[in-house]
Length: 185
Image 1 (tube, rainbow, N blue to C red):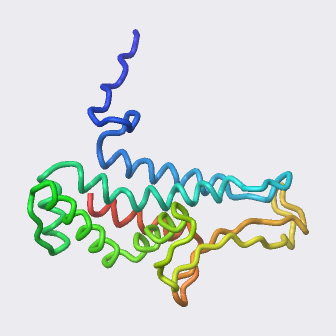
Image 2 (cartoon, rainbow, N blue to C red):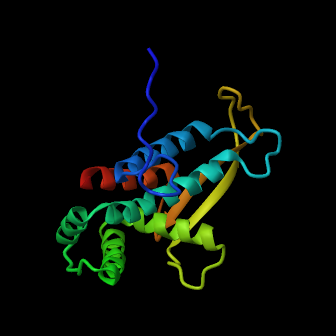
């Protein structure tokens, strides 16, 4: 039995994605890919895969806000109510509403504020305005014991995000952001 191809997306230039939950699934896929890619530094890679995957996860986590807001008028009305602001359903009102929605999300969920900082910092390279408390860093540490392919002396990559006094593995921040969106959906 021959399978039928999926219905094409009605949205231009998004390949087959057409719903906010597609972005939520993409975020889960990004987090899983990041966790699977973290390992020992192999063959002196200039840009180890986890660095790219972490950026992709931050960008996806943050831009779910765009997809959710743009999805339809009923969702916009619900998100405005849930996040406590009023907006007007006009072309300029929708744009202003997106800004209010994103600001409300960033205030309500610190992990998504952090994802916004990383997404914009990575996209624009050098920003004149960023939160000085948020620092994303790739830290290389020497392995002290043999574990799997890792032998003492190998460099092992750790991706960390510091927010003020709190430093956590990047994956933890992304999982927290996923949890916020999952509960909101």
